[in-house]
Image 1: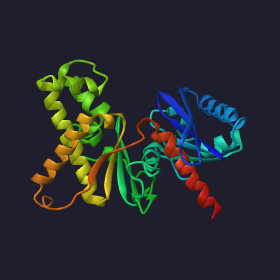
Image 2: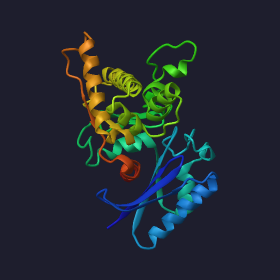
Image 3: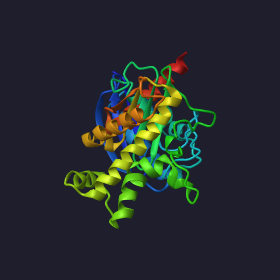
Length: 303
């Protein structure tokens, strides 16, 4: 059997896994993200070398934050400043001798869901990854829609209000993401430094008024952004990923807010709008999606 290696490159850690042809993870681990470009690339190449001693590795898939061109060039790389302007495909192929494909992390996480996940068998869908900010992916006829500059799916930049003093605070990122949205707003109002959204949900359940009001606005703003995307693209389903998507209270309250907006919107009240569903693969989505993408890239090369 042939195998594939998937890397999910994040600002704090790099997760990696060995997957078989069916997308099953056989081994997985992580290491702290180095601050130097060559250290990042050399450590990844070292891991590949170790796997190839025991397995027939066909190719390497990379999930990377930021703007990733189709040729593997990183225009940006999120919080990983040392990788800005790096062609990850060329660098890793040079170091390993294997075929490499690099994909934006939100795109990779979205396509992972086609591999037996929440979007299995669905040709047209939208996914949003709710984390530090909000990334996403639009899939049309089973293919990623990238846009003219490889920036499609940056839903977090969408404006939800018009705050003329600070337009950034009007974006979906600053109102509906987990870190720079929910946690930032709660901490500003409470004067605390809460770092886990579950704390806010726990406090709301215990009756804390501040937690309840902040969460209510958070769910409504996120639902508003989702509805904007839905009416623009008319997908079959909306898949929500990111760590918070595993929180059942979050999902229940988001769905209620989404339905409430539809009921208040006279033009939409009697229309069928797509369901919001949680992603299946959660923390493994980047690894799985990176391999799904490199397998697809290999198939195109063979045609």
